Amino acid sequence: MTASGLRPGTKDRSRPDPAGDGRQEGARRLLAAGVSGACTAAGLGLAVLTVLVTAGWIAAPHVGLGLVGVVRTGAVLWLVGHHVAVQVHGAGRIGMLPLGLVALPGALLWRAGRSVVRAYPVTELRHVVAAALAVAVPYAALAGALAIGSRSALAAASLPQALVASFLIAVVATGFGAARALAPSAQLGALVSPRTRSVLAGTAGALAVLGAVGAMATALALAGQLHKFSAVYQLLEPGAVGTGLLLLAQLAYLPNAVIWAIAYMLGPGFAVGAGTVAAPSGSVLGPLPAFPLLAALPAGSHGSGPGWLAAVMLTVPYLAGIVAGVLTVRLAPASALEAAPVRGFCCGVLTGGVLGVGAAFAGGPLGDGRMTTVGPSPWQVAMVSSLEVGIAAAVAAAAVNWWYLRSRSSGAANVPADTDRPRTSVTPGESGDDHVIYLDRWSREGVGAPSAKRPRGPSALP
Image 1: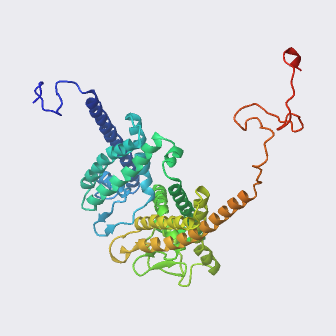
Image 2 (image 1 turned 90 degrees about the horizontal axis):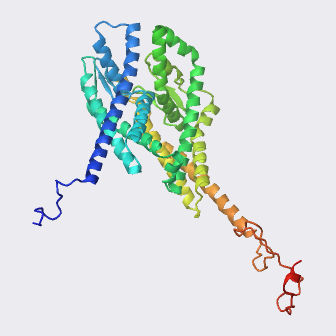
Image 3 (image 1 turned 90 degrees about the vertical axis):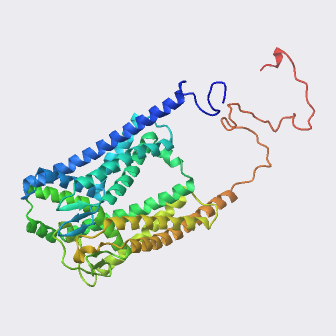
């Protein structure tokens, strides 16, 4: 015991602890800002989707579905926006969910991350992780509560998926929003090493090429099957409000269609039910649900178009690999000739991983029976895209890097060796000052020349 009656290393509770009180106050502020941001993001998203469900209910009222059922349906649709599977009574498990709907909670959580940074003094990147967790934990708790409260005899959302999916989406979206509010994108990118940044840029370039061509292929397929598209609308007869809601549903499923088109270009294709396939080599399709976007699916057992069109589509992954290899070398050339192909192949592997995850989320079951298998195979898409994009990126990176090293070596060899000649002058700004020194080579005061006496005093002035 010490003279004060306390054990060594313990704090005197009677004395104020400014540092400890400041940390506790900061933690309380961060927790309050996180809970407020999570509730705001969840409330706005739930309100938007409930309004859409209410509009559909008013346009086409269902017997036995009151306002309580409308609110429950809005909550289920909010969970579907977080890619939570739903068990529908009499239909089975619905797991093929619209990826475009994830943009709504993602944008709201992005703004929540920015608001937390403004409310809480975030000055370092490690604080960004704390801010993201402060929003993600209460947000996941709200999702779990909605999954339990929205259960009915008609539909029930998966509680484990609601907790995990909402937490992951909240962490990613809030973290990016908080980091972007903390510093510009250029400063955030400077935290990554040049080699890693070049690989990420090459992967982004390959994904951009595949996504752009996939979106273009989807649009052309819809334009080519416009009569089928109109026929499905006439069959459904949704009305004015239903037409708008159906259009929103198709826009939400457009990212799924783009990933399906990418899987089609890669070669494995995708399935629309058990025993079906849609690939460049041919398509075998069965009965399809009455959804207008499915009218763009290719038909024909010997290919869905001219042979040259299938060949062009199959070359798109290699074009994406070439773009990835060029971007990788342009951002960070490798001094060793064998390092560039390795980084190019890493771009392909990373691209394959992203596309594999996208294929897993773009498909899923649509009830029981033959529609339990819908969408592309994740492992096939990941494997084929890694090989096609990776090999093309490795070859392109090796060629561009060899040309860069050759140009640099030839440029260094063509520099004249004038180091033995004395410099006669120094240009202004070259040595850091503005003085110019001239050397008269014809003067008699050169090296070895007898120094002549110069007059002193005012007569020496010009």
